[in-house]
Structures are given as structure tokens and as C-alpha cells.
Length: 494
Ligand SMILES: *Cc1c(COP(=O)(O)O)cnc(C)c1O
Image 1 (cartoon, rainbow, N blue to C red):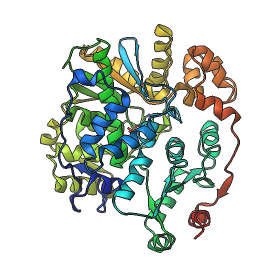
Image 2: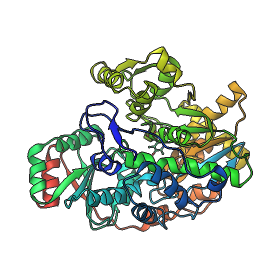
Image 3: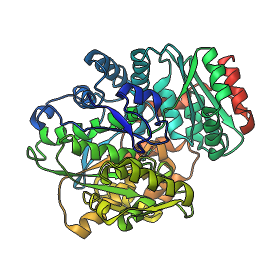
Image 4: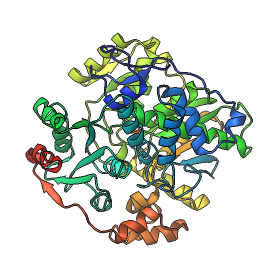
């Protein structure tokens, strides 16, 4: 039985389903598995498995208190025709690398990979733990996570989801994606403040005991779909495992041959999943962590010092504009020799001074990582050169990884086969992508750019984009930040 405990040591061990219901551990730490088992199948067997079967092999290792029937039901409900390809996560070879396309789900970005299964893992967890309350997901979003959570939870029985977004702080496409969301249990609210205001407002409600008891009296309980939930982390291990099987099946690698993985990184969740893929036995040599101009992680890997005291820069890869990478805490815990005291002390430094420094011994635990970053110009250059060489069009986040990988190869001459996590469809960031290829192409409104991009990339418009253009607006509530709790009460009839 794999149990979960807090990186900060302050709470008892819990089952996987309890950890998924909780999200964050009560002491503010992140849940980590007490042991990491090995895959029960060989890489050769893996190479013959579908995405769903691979998902079962990986999920059953970590979520040991779920039955096979429960896990298979969650997997079947998640990885179905919400994805526009049978393969779920296709691998595309271009210019000497393998792009693992994680954007074929409902919102055309990689958060769909985990957020399409999390609601099912969560409602199953509630049943297993004898909880009959309806789960209310509260989320503040700067754009992408909100839509992926809405799509994941829409019409999932036993849940309601309320998403707050800054009314004037998201792109036109992002807003359209959210306000057209269908589902009897989805609620989308614009606030007159910025993203931080939305986030603070949500955190306050999570900590508001009076509100919690009012909720409980009506048979509701809050939960969060945040990226620190192990119910989001574990499903992300699946696609790296699947990608290895694919490379083997297609004869690009020998059985057992190690691969490198490059990940465009923000909150450190996606790359941490690749790290766990290595732990369960997927042959991985290097994990290459790619940052944009907000290169706090690059600096950390270079120096061993994490320092968030710096200017926050808005870039063309907004989902990586992050100064506190929450999931890094799990890696810190592991390289500290699973020492929760050390981890808690370092995290206390992050809270009080905005910085911490790891020991030389801990630095040795980072040997399997390499890190790099790309400036705005370099990101655009990566899109343009890949397009000119191959005709393949990547989004801005993937481009950061693509650039960092190129530079890594130039410096190291390490020609190990490499998978690059492709985290968003170029359609999601059409303006920046087209501007990188040719600024003339980007001179139109956001919605008009889709057709141009389809022509340039020689691909069909993804269904998620076509639907967006004709979808009916269903949500128009806007409130002041201070009124957020009142809006929640009104929605839930408290
Ligand atoms: C969230 C996101 C990332 C960053 O992933 P993390 O798991 O937070 O490191 C990268 N690219 C896109 C498109 C994203 O939406």
C-alpha cells in the first residue's frame, strides 16, 4: 500500500484517496508517496499498450486504495472523445526531437491531461471515504487553469465548480472559452480586480470557518483543483511512460535505451511527473528544465539558491510566468533524503525572506537535471526556425523548451533521443505564434487569426476552436473582489 505524507512532516500518513480529497496537507506541505514502486510491466509490453492501459499501469502503482474497477472507470470517463485523437498524446518527430503533443483535450493545453481525470478521482475518493457532501471546487484563474477545470468538472455528478477570473486580465480567447462553458454545475464569475485579488479572495474563503460550517449545513464542502494535488501529478506520469513505449514501438530507441525529456516549466508539476516516471523505471537520462525570462528555476539549478525576490515579467508564455514554483517543494524533499524537517525549514525561509539555499549534499541530488532559459526573442526564433525547417508549428511555451533543448545540444553534444513536452496548441497563442513567423500575419483581431494559422501550419482548426467561434455566451456575472463570498453563497443558495 502506497501511503502519502506531508513534505513538512506535520501530519499523519493518509491514503491516496484521502490525499486527493485534501489537496494540500494540513500543515501546508505537499503530499508525497512514502515509497515509489516500479512498473509491473516491461518496456516491451508497454510499447504495445494503449494510452488507457498505460494509464491503468501507472495509476494503479500510486493510487493503491482504488480498486481496478474504480480506476478503469475514472480512466474511461477521462480519456474518451473529449480528446480529438485516439492516441490522446501523439508523438511528432521534427528536426531531431520528438514533440509529445499534450494539447488534444477540451481546452487545447496540457492541463487537460490531468484535469479530465481529477474530477472522477475526486468523486470516487469521496464515495470511498464515506463523504456524501457535494464537492464545491473554487478556483481563481489567470486564464488557462480555469477553463481546463471547468471542462473537467462540467456535469460530473456530485460536484459544483465556481471559477473567478480577472475581468480585464485575461485574453479575449481565454475569456470566450470560459464564458461559453456548458454544464449544469459550472459557474464563471469575472471580478473587477486582478488575478492576485481573485486568488486572495479564494484563499480567504478556504480559510473561513463560518463559511465552511454554513456550507456543511447545506451538504457542501470546498475542494481545490490546484496543481499541487497528487490527483493531478500522478496522471501526468502516464504520458511520459506512454511516450517511451511509443518510441520503442516505432523503433526510434532500443529496449532500455535512456531518453532525455525537456519540459517548459512553471509550477514544476509537469517536470516533476517526468522525474517520477524515472523513479518507476522508465529509462531517463536527463530532465531538462526550460524557463522563460522568469528564470527563477534556472538560477536555482545553477546556484542552489532559490530567490523569488525579483521583478515579475509578463511574457508570451504566460503559463510559465511564475516566481514560486510550488511543486519544487516535492523535489526538495526528495533530494534532502526525504527529510521533512529540512524541507519545512527551507520553506519557512521562502515564506519569511522569499529565498532559501540548499546544501552541497542536496545539490548532488540535482545531477539528473539540466536547466536553461529562453528570452522573448529566442522563443520567437525557435518558432520561426522550426517552422522554416520543417513546416511544424509550435506554441510559445513549447518554443521555450525547443530553444533550451537546441542550446543544450550545442553545448553538450548529448544526442540522446529527446522528448519535448508540447504543452499547448499553437491556436491557443495564435497571435504570438504568427508574429514570430511573420509580423505581417498577426495584424488582425484574435479570432480572425485562427484561419491564418490553420493555413500557415497546414492543419485543420481544432474542434475546440471551431466550437468557440459559434458558442453561446452563458456566463456574464461580474462582481467586486469584496463580493466574492456573497456570490458563492448566492450560487449555492446558502
Ligand atoms: C501550466 C503550463 C505550463 C507549466 O507547467 P507546470 O506544470 O506548471 O510547470 C507550461 N505550458 C503551458 C501551456 C501550461 O498551461
